[in-house]
Amino acid sequence: MTDSKSPNHYYARRLYRVLSTIFGLFLTGVGIYAVFFGVADSLLRILVGLLIILFGANMLWSAIQSKASWLSRVGPLP
Image (cartoon, rainbow, N blue to C red; front, side):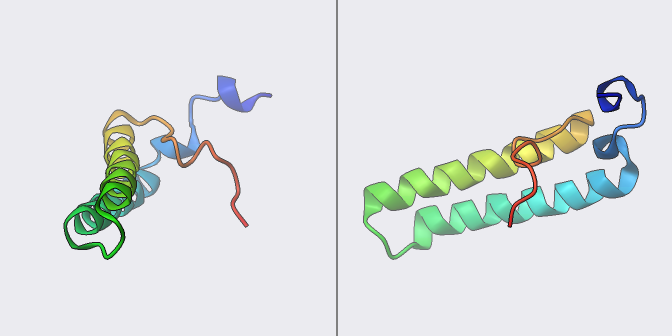
């Protein structure tokens, strides 16, 4: 693969980083909402909410550092 040697990765571009930041903030907000206002059982609500917060925070941190986030490594989703 020549993509790993290319200095211009898709996740280092400005637009991708801005959109990743916005989506990371959105996921973090959804996770916080799920923890405090979810209608599921409290243990399930907290676990899923914290998992969503973790993915959102990782997207924010990856956008700051110009790295690929965990969600972008999953691959194309259907």
